[in-house]
Length: 161
Image (tube, rainbow, N blue to C red; front, side):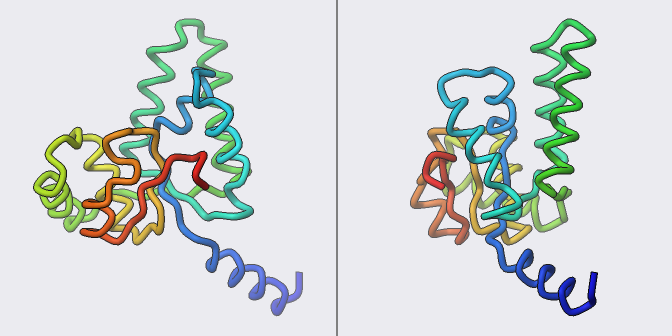
């Protein structure tokens, strides 16, 4: 690939809005529950309309969910393979907490006392990474105007995107 073409593609990629994905979005695809279609459709748009990342906490939640849901080794292997393919095909990046992430968790708890610890940590990681959108199914967080105005990161349900 020519250097000019590569640079143009890289710039186009970097200009896509950054989304941070909550574990529930991926787990919903395994559960095939009521939000299955909206989560599946959203995941299919990653890499085309959005750049995305997941935190190491999100990866841990997904791993724990797979282990709890699937008792058969082959089912677990297929699930791990799905996650691996999702990350590779959609070019999902990873993020880990920084020191300021933990300070942001404290601010989140002061703004929204109903936020669960893991949700606050995942949202704080998204904020630290300057994600434009945190994508979740959590009803306490989706569209929470107090959190959105305090931190500048939109909190959206996948069907809104």
